[in-house]
Image (tube, rainbow, N blue to C red; front, top):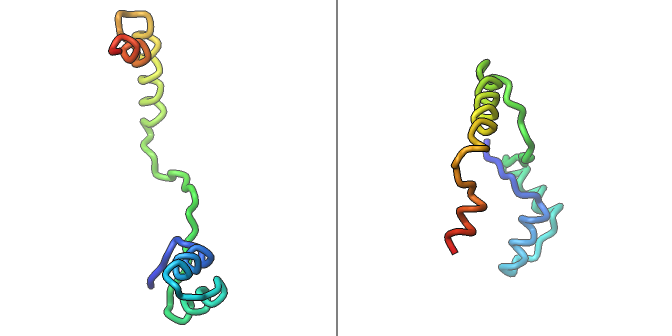
Length: 83
């Protein structure tokens, strides 16, 4: 099966820019006849994430708190000193 993530309105706009007068409804009908399907962009929630994922974020947070008071230049101060 073929598919596209563009809306029929966007496809019609592109075709009109190259002098092919067509409506979004016609684009939809033609895509259907050519066995195309429209797909929607949407967020997906990770269902098979690692059981250690939370531990990784906790480690990063601890490391960030531990190094925040040390002689580690932050990116903001590094950018100021680079000028």
